[in-house]
Length: 422
Image (tube, rainbow, N blue to C red; front, side):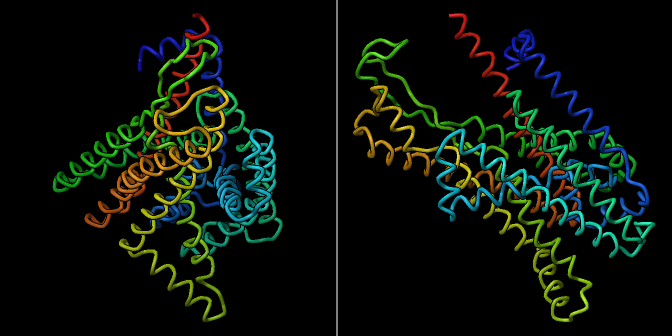
């Protein structure tokens, strides 16, 4: 792997892409440390430290919400918009047709996602302001309508700016832009997290910290293992194909976990939303609404229910996103056009059915494994009573997966140029 990365650095195009990504991350972190006026940062951090859900929301904003910066909402509204349109693709025929149209259809859906991000950013920023006003310690030092409008407009513009930066990063093809922004936010908080851990360290907690380290190692090894695993489907070419001889045998690699980090991001985003809604209506003047919000929060605070929902959402989104990015019908059609076939399987529909069967089986194993790795920190939280590792474990999961995906894309650049040479 390191040899491939060194080779990639020597390629001017790849090197410029990596430097551009680093520059965008530096810009992102610079903006994340420009706080909005009229906010008590100390009270805000205390409020976040006392609430696990807000800690997860801060994680998916890229660490920008804790400082309530000019990009306070981060990329969370864009992630929500992406979830909405991918779910609509399952129930709205027009969107489903666009998903099947290839690049043109994806561009159209992406444009709709960008537009939907704007109202979602406005709604979520209003919700965050309401949550801050519900804090026992005053966080916002001003309460006039003009101040609220200014905050909403500023953080909405910040979200749109980050969405644009994320797309620019994705165009460089060295990683997913949105995932890399979240990665930058997680990594930037690492030094302060280590410092706090060292300051608050108590020798009596040695076994607890060793357990944390052990679970962290298991998480890293598990994610790397499942991300690298693949099923090789044998392919036989019955006639001559350009670049191949007649009757060449090869294979089609199918990754066990095609969806990468996306199921984790989607699952936690959906878990955050009902909790935010519940906290928003907790102070409602209508008794039954306030009682319903209190009941919802009580249910979601149950670690068993939370862990079960988290697991099921990760498994479900793994299947869902795999179905979005892998189309057995298109693969079977392309194979048939190139004169390729799977030994023992007839071309066309039988090949598509066989590929669907294979992908369902390997995705089952991948989704269960990913779900177990995802809820492992939650289980640790239930046993230790600390919410720190639940957030830290999720961060570790995202960081490892994003690094693996980015390294694979960089290695693909090197491989392409090796083929160009030959």
